[in-house]
Image 1 (cartoon, rainbow, N blue to C red):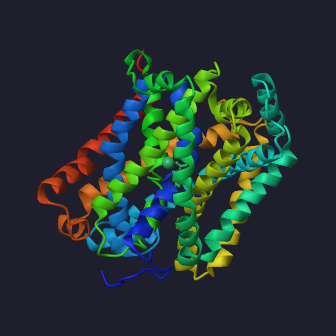
Image 2 (image 1 turned 45 degrees about the vertical axis):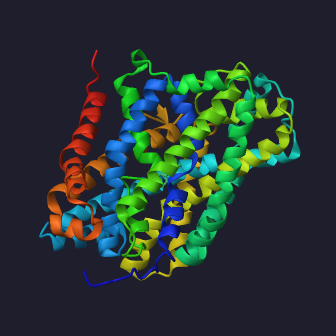
Image 3 (image 1 turned 90 degrees about the vertical axis):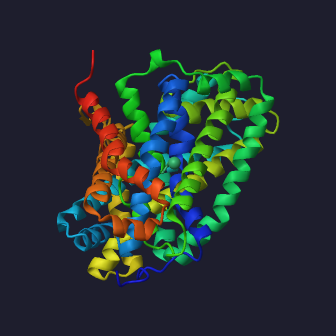
Length: 452
Ligand code: PFF
Ligand code: NA
């Protein structure tokens, strides 16, 4: 293909690509969602299925996304059509990119609301108003927050503006600078917290909860949640990694790079779990508390531990940073598309998209108060969007990307980008053609037709 670089620019080095993609991957999915869905799904066996999904489905699909993006050097829609044409496939494959943009917009709308909760918790950690609070009062404080649309709107608006600001600045000045500073800080903070968790009495119990495999607790629905989460956590199935891949330099090895990103994301999720569960157990709290797990239990724990206020501030800043770098990546594919297809200025594209997702976010934050009566299939707007994006749209996007990479793209073009040793290439290709699509299909099938 002719165009050597994207019109958006390119990452300064392979290392920056790893940082940026890791910034996208590591987010609320790792620190908020992974621990609470692990708690809801009974721990160990769920974690094992999740790890298998990352390794067998997630990593190979991430390689496909990166190479498609890098080959075409365009936004996901145009990248898919270009790569399809080169292999004499039909242009309609670009539809995956359109569905991906939609997923990004829908995910952003609830992601930003949770990002807003995090900002609020940074504030109350700083003021110290939750220090020494009981678990009942912490629960009441969280519920009270959910019942205040104006407060939620303020934080959601701030989070949206922060995100649009970085996206508008472009991939070098914006995303790259943010990531360079924020990612290393995030790792340091997480390990400090893990160190604290090890000193609490609950570490063994937390460890066992996560790594003792009790398969009696596993259901098809929890397998679906594990699979869907493996897409969500790696930012797959919606073109984000494809867009980031289009800014990747040609000399970097896709295989090694993707392995590093997958390993870092998994590491952060496991460390987050190992930091959170011991705190939960040593304070006699319930691991299955749901989405409020982090927001109710942790302030209680921080209120009791030495230097709790300091750790509490650090912890919520850490999550805020992680959420921010992920939110940026939710908007990037669509902004790239608007710039390339309609020749919009990046700043205008970012603001226009920002207004749309901000508006949708209002429906999500309203789920807890003025719009709590509005339900879809028995779920409020917030839960519904979380459910259909993570559990349906991303796996579906992932299946299609795998089928496209495995059956449509010619081996010589795929190998030209991937440059894998022959044996590894065969494995990867087998995963694209069979393992990944079949795994996703089975889980989706049993979700729709549950086994009794
Ligand atoms: N991977 C992010 C997380 O784990 O929080 C969420 C996410 C970001 C999903 C970007 C999808 C995406 F395109
Ligand atoms: Na993640």
